[in-house]
Image (cartoon, rainbow, N blue to C red):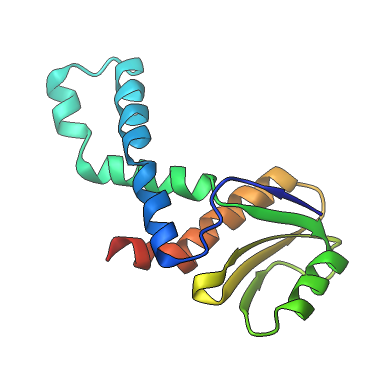
Length: 140
């Protein structure tokens, strides 16, 4: 088993702090992307809205969530050690590998099974974790 990612918030305050920390980076990414797309001032003003920057911040935060990647046995061992967690598992029970994210403050975990496409599974799981655990909390 290995762990990949940066953000593993232990508390709601940790989650909010991590989310806020990527705000400036999201603004830079959006601005530089618009520049690369050769937006003039008028087009930039029309198309680069607060919602666009917010979406970039959401995506950045999600892409940095810490995930565990392992075989089914490692995941089942984790579940056995954490019976109080509400764990939502996406995917087939008939594949060998699992990626999961744990949010201790919420008593939740989100997992996805996969066979071969590890990077795709990690990316999908991070977006699912954001949507299931963090989106409502961070939009309050």
